[in-house]
Length: 365
Image (cartoon, rainbow, N blue to C red; front, side):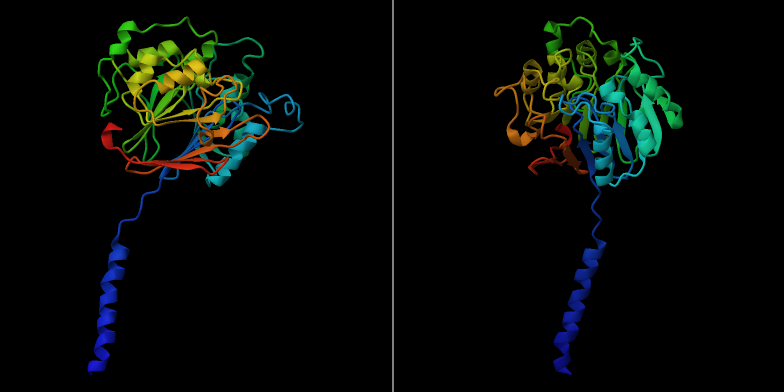
């Protein structure tokens, strides 16, 4: 009788442990964000914890914008191929939303091509028109307009929300307008901006489609990312002056690829991001002036770049581990951000596997 006691006791002790493990709450899935290399265009993929997907812009059509050695390769659809490869990697078989920020070729160029390759449920844009009607300037718009109604097309207005389960995605600019009220529940939103007193405005951007850009803020828990497409300096000013309408953000996706027609310092100080990501090319965007403006506000931890900027030189490029692509002969690498529900996130460079963890900071991040 006594010889059986240890076995019975061991069996009894094993049961509660297994029950404790079974009753632990499951870990929530991450919000995954892929910043793709479109050689100075934009294509940013969001895969929500619910599994829904949102692609912001589609890169250049065909092989446009490629270095001379690659520009005339037959049958090449460089950026569409890169987007499809990442969609496969992310297990995305349907694009729930495709946001077309504006109708320049480096943003809208592959909308038609992607619609032939993958189902698209919704297009979101600034409306079925372009303010650049010159032949050659409106090619991307015309190709997009031909397939726009194949999905449910939505004209965005500032203040609208894109209904992705598990995320709060708010439109803050569209068709030349920006939000007029501070974003609710956001640290710093509504606060007076002292830099506005001496802020300088610029002449209107010479490419007016940029003025129409759809800009969004994506929120997941305490994490916030702002992406304004190619919005102009003066519109950034309107979002920051006299009061800060956006508030503090975790990640700033740089405006207009790091071109000095954007990058108003009064806006940068208002949002004071922890991390910035620049969708530049080696010889497009990435200006030293813009790079420095992003670095100047306190609190920036890291500046990740899709490309090393030729103009930036040694003083205005981030360290090599933060650069997805180093030159125009070995390129096509993306940056991936995985965001957890507590606001912490990991950034990974597909070129070298370098990864960095960013701890949650709570509501003040």
